[in-house]
Every structure is written in C-alpha cells, then in structure tokens.
Image 1: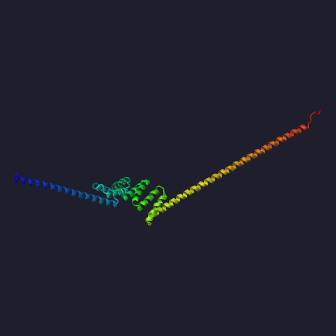
Image 2: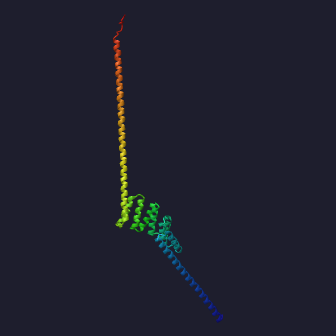
Image 3: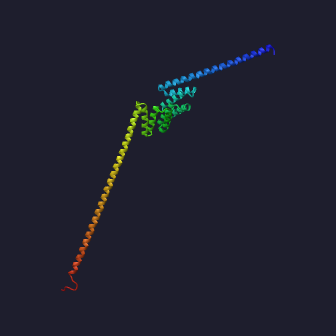
Length: 267
C-alpha cells in the first residue's frame, strides 16, 4: 500500500470515530435533559398536589399526585400523601391500598402502619387494627399516638380494662396528654356504669326471687289452711253422722221395751 492510500484510510477512520463520539454525546445529553424534565415534572405536580391538599381541594390534589407518580411511581411521599387525601375523602379502602404500597417499598414505615390501623378501626375491624399498632410498637414502643390508638381499639372491642392500660402508658410517657386523660376518665365512667348496671340487675333478680318465694309460701299457707278446713269439716260431718246413728238406735231400743212380748191388749 502506498503512502497516499494509507493517508486516505486513516482520514476515513478519524471521521468515523468523530461521528460516533458526537452521536454518543448527543444521546447522553438527551438522557440528562429527559431525566431533568422528569424530575421537574414530578416536583411540579407533587408540590401542586400538596398545596391543593392544604386548601382542602382533595380531589384535585389526588389528580396531581397521580400525575407526579406517573413520572416516579415509587416515590413514597407522593404515595403516602395520596393515601392521606383518600382518607380525607372517606375512600378508606383505596387509602388502605395506597398505604400497603408504601409498606411494599418500606415495610417498617411506622406512619403508614399507624394509619392503616386507624383505617381498619374506622371499618370496625378493631382486631386487625391492633395487629398494625403492634407492628408499630415493636419498632417504637413509646409511640404515644399508637399507644393511644390501641387503647381506642380495645375500647371498640369493649375490653375497657385493656384500654385503660394503654391510656395509662401514654400518660406515663406524657402526663399532659389531654386526649389520653379524657379517654381514661371516660372509660372509667363507662366501666362504673357497667358495674352499676350489673348491680342493679342483680338487685332486680334478688327482688324477683324474694317475691317469688313469698308468693310460694303464701300459696302453701293457703293450701294448708284449705286442707285443714276440709279435714275439720269432714270430722264434724262424721261426728254428726255418728251421733244421729247412735240416737236412732237408742230410740229403736226404747220402743221395743214399751210393748213386751205375749201381752196383748184386748178391747
């Protein structure tokens, strides 16, 4: 190969490499711009959703959270805030689904666990709610909000003695917690009313028993008196009958002696 041919081949190679490098740089630049655009779009919709939430425009807020999540589907803050907004709208089952998505990403998210407990309490499933509160307390034993909520769940189950235990735990940690103090007093009042009702029911039962026994005794006395009267009347009747029979026999005996045998009275 002569020198001229070598120079031509080298020039073509240099041009080819230059073009490839330019395309690569253009692609990188495009990716960077796209990522930046996505980040900007997510922040824009997420921030707008938060503002709408604080304005009480919950339906519009959900729309913007959904738009934000279309750019970043695993963003925990957006998912969590959407769940809160669904709670505000009373769409509890949808809120539960969103909190569960948070737990799929971060299983020990205590806020999501606590709010799931509240949602199940609102649905009347207090036992399920307690299972979520227990998961929070296993991570953070002194979480007063969860201790208080667990007390509420036990109140919902009618297990007031256990509710009192958790309200007291809250007050041990924070003696100025007004909600726990009010609930504690209210629960004690409910327990006292229950005890009073039980005592009243026992008193009513005792009264019914006493009245019943009195009626039975009175009935027995009446029956005994009636039986005694019948026996007395029967004895009197028998005595009178015997007396009449004896008198009759005596009269017959007297009539026979006044007309002796063999002595006929003639004309």
